[in-house]
Structures are given as structure tokens and as C-alpha cells.
Image 1 (cartoon, helix red, strand yellow):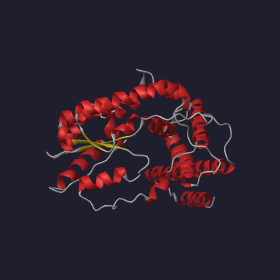
Image 2 (tube, helix red, strand yellow):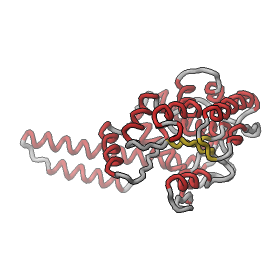
Image 3 (spheres, helix red, strand yellow):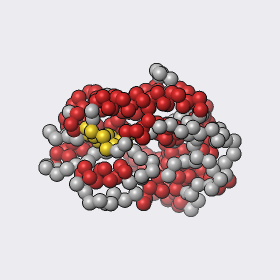
Image 4 (tube, helix red, strand yellow):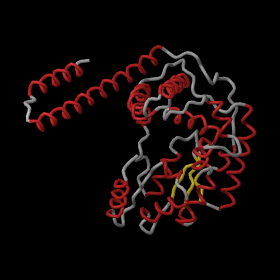
Length: 318
């Protein structure tokens, strides 16, 4: 989490732009409560805010959302998690997804501070991957085609076997009582990052969509969202009817028991690389602490420094 000074720096940077148009994009804004939304509009809006949000079909959003949560430590299997979040009410998992994804409520929350005329909803169209970029370019007065999507492969989704491997690693971390810092370094920056940078195995299945038992509930949520947006009269770019669709996916085993050898090797490689980096950092910190202690006692520390440098050199060679 960034320090409070980072927010102050951002506000100052936006203010320094003067009359220029500034785009500030952050997925966490969708989770802002009423007080936080008011502060964001007040301090970043500079008296002329415009709030832009993207609405995606729930049957496409939910599988993707589960995968993102797994990369952050989620331990529930996909169908188990789906049953929890599709309940009418629930605990932290339920609130975590519906606070930012109940679009009419999000619109009301932000319109209360920015004004309904200053809120726009873009409907994501899975068949037109340039839908959202084109809308942003139009609203910002940018040349058509300026926003380049060609680099998106570097941020690819995990396949289902990859996601299941990470989920089971999450269980190991929880059972071991290991720290969140270690998880971030070894799993998120090691295992997950290495797998995402590699091409997926051609035989790997994607994360499954919506099972038959969940279709009725998804359809109900779809209707509530579309009717809510229509009642608000908010500006919409795209086809609202796209949000009222749900497709069934019964062909994929939601908990596969195998993963390709290449994917497993990439995961291990990523973990080892981050473990070595962590070890090198610890060695440097330890060396600095001992040098400070030696100087405080008036002890010559050069021989120790030579030994530490030798150890760091060996770590680099691994």
C-alpha cells in the first residue's frame, strides 16, 4: 500500500496540470465508499471532474475475478467461491466483489459528488476489443488508434491448471503460517510472474465460465443491473443489452489434478529466482548492520567485508 504522501503527490501533480485534461485510472476507485469517493472527486476533480467506469458481463467477469483473487492468495476453488459470492448477502468475499461491480450503486455513489451528467458507463464488448480504448480516445480528444493493445499478451490470464497450482500453493502458505511479504516476493513476483511471461501450454484449459446451477442467479443480477442503469438515466457508451446475457459452461473440470511439466518448471524457476534475490538482499542488509556495529566499536571490518562480498558473488553466480 502506498504511503499517504503518494496521494498528496498525485493531487499536487494533477493540480499542476492547470487547464490540461488529466486521466487518473485505478481499479481500487471502484471500491471507494461514499466518503472516499467524495474526497477523490474533490481533490482530483479540480472543479471539473468526469467519472468513467467500465461494465463487463458478469458471466465473463466472475471467472476472471476469481483468477485475480487466486493470484492474491485466495484458497477457495472456483465453484465453491462462486456459490459464496452469488448469495444475496455475505461476508468479506461477497462485499469485495459487489462493492465495485454493482454498477448502479457505484454510479449513484460517484454521481452524488460529481453529478450524474459527469458520469459515463462504457459497456465492454467482448467481440470488439477496441471498444473501451476507442471510447477513451473519443472522450479525451485523442487521435483514433493512439492507445496500443499489442502489449497485452505480457499481462495474460493464467490457464486453469496454472491457477489451480497457485491456489494450492496458497494453501501451503496458509498452513505454514508464512508471511504476506514472503508470499508477495516468492509467489506473486516469482511463481505467477514467471508463468504469465511464458506462453501457456496449448492443452491447458481456461478458467471455466458459469455452471448451469448459477445461470438463474446471474440472469437475476443482470436484470437488476440493466434496469438500475436505465432508471438512473446515466450516459452509456455501448449496448446495455450485452449486460443481460449469460452463457453456460459445463465442459471444463473446475479442479484439474494435472499441470504441464513446462508450467511446473516455470513456477519453480520463478520461486527460486525470487528466493535467491531475497537471500542476496538479506546478506547485504546483514553486512551493513555488522559494518555499522564494527565502526561503533572501533573495530576494523575489512576482512568481514571481503568475506561478504565473496558470498554475494557466489549468490550472483547461481
